[in-house]
Image 1: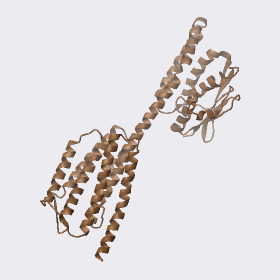
Image 2: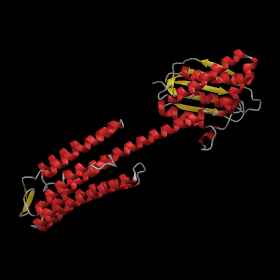
Image 3: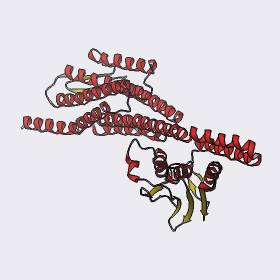
Image 4: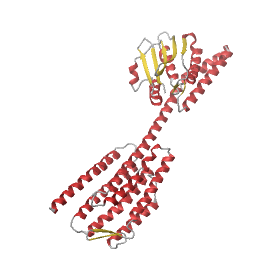
Length: 422
């Protein structure tokens, strides 16, 4: 009967361990394939997970020994392993926050904790096992105190790092404090005999998950910021059109000799165009449509000076108080002129800019009667219409808007920007 109870207890212990082991294995797989983690962080975290598996195994074997025949020395060794591993795991989590840190003071505390608990082999200073019963010594709380000190330091270091990077996920490392404190209280209340895998071990596995999520989210946000900067650079480069600049300067040079007053207006339009370009590249938030229209108008003035009556522009602006991402309208108008009208057989045409307000959204339409194109080419990576793709992406990302294109070869193009009312 006693043997049957031991067998049932062993099965219960294994079943209690299984979710933890699977979670650790899943974390290991996630870390090994995580593109955001450096090799150093991966090595540190894999070491943490191996130590966590050792801690789970220690819980299992200590529970088995405690429920079996008297083996005081073996149980003492197993207990020492548990008391030593917990501060070491906490210490290694420091390197998930500062991979290049040394943390000598923390390791000194870990060394003191290890030395004290090794004395249990020959002294009851911290604890002793007699007749398969645990007896705490005068320094029995050493592991708890050292772990709490390391925990406070870890949260302080994490908070400082989060404030430095202005991370909103600072709550993630802070959550480990109540998790560990509650687990210590539960272990004290339930006792090892009622919980074969300690609540503290379960909480350590949970903390490992939190300390995987936190650096992962930070790295992901850094990657997003880097990608946005790359898009900004691409946007800037896409707006620097050498041919347009050269042609505009050539027109201004010719006008200086033939029509000085018009040349002066052309210089004003050229400087306004460049000013709006620079302001737009530094703008983080959506701007008013009237500001974007000023940019478009300065561009079209220069093109009208170059092409004369071959290029006609019609404005039908019903509402101007519309917020939209910067450099949204100008690339569309530029495409209408350069790829629509100027690439048509006659090279003559009209660009119409129209706005209207509907019940749930605003619409901005840019229409040209030029050569048109197949909108399907926008899905190709080598398309020359990168400006349109960029506009579509920023409309969706910055204000939940959309962009609709209606065009066909020889039938002109209609581009509609749809902006929800917010």
